[in-house]
Image (cartoon, rainbow, N blue to C red):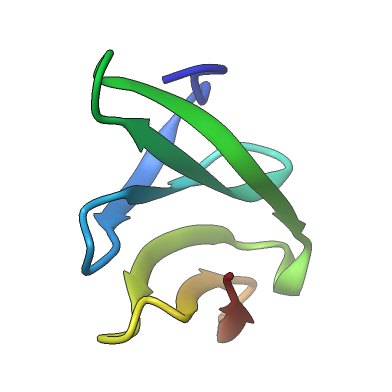
Length: 88
């Protein structure tokens, strides 16, 4: 991965197998999306989102079946938060 995350708490390929979403379990929480170069097999980051919801750690990431949306879930301070982000 370029650049590589410091600590990952989850990852998921999009339905096309072209993008990999990686969430980090460090401060600050973030969601990175990497694109796979199918000729060199190198993953290059194309998007980075830093989250600050409820101060918790991101625990899971999932793509919608269409690959248009990414959902993340985190928990902390006795609460659970979910977010959905559009990706294009």
